Image (tube, one colour):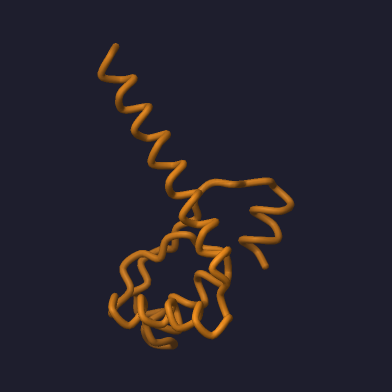
Length: 99
């Protein structure tokens, strides 16, 4: 896969991967919000932006974890990356206020 195989493994990127807006016609016309969200997470995305139906996307990801399609460890990896990003942003913001 492009995100995990190339971006993460080959290039060593360990930052947050964010989707484009999932409410675009190109997505909505082909997939439900739930299908699109699950596919994005399976592909390696950490944050799924603007699903057309947030509740359906959220529920579909939960169900994918419950049925083993997405592992809890996979979600935990995303949470850790997002947490590290937030901590770096906070440190940068605090540093800029001191100068």
